[in-house]
Image (cartoon, rainbow, N blue to C red; front, side, top):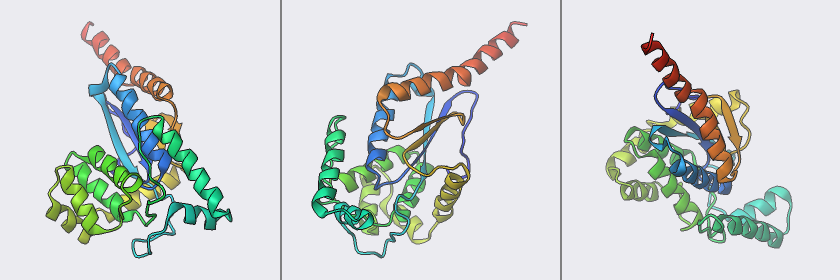
Length: 238
């Protein structure tokens, strides 16, 4: 949850993740981290928390959705064909880990409200499911993730109360949580995503291979949860 990073606990390993719904490498990074956790012997003791980051803060929910290739072309002064080729390279990399991107029909929009939905889902114990559903909606299905009716449908699909979720978004109940995440990212010097922090100590930036996440999990577990357990056992034996 916002305002709590970085996380530490005596009995679990907390991984804090900054990402954005529209970030292609964030979807990949989340998938690779999930694969690493699934292989980790202490997977039950790992807690992953998601924090908001705006890849394109200049976009708002009121803006007309724009295709990522058009946005890339305009932002960097590239020919449209070159921007499309770059996006295809990204899509090819995603396919290597089992993800399906259709950037040709993606709709780039402001994502503040989508991030609010992530925070709402966190309070219901469904944050990761919600984050993954938002990624899929944007990258695979080409849905407008700034449209609150779409967000309500996505919330219901992961088992959340649609009306309650929409009411929370309408009331801006989690707007401050999003802003707290953004402020925290600035304070810690996070300028790009995905950005992962393990046990408040070890940072991994980008969609790294599973092995990199596995090493970060092992190191941070051994130096935090594992060492705490060892110290506790030593104290009990005195």
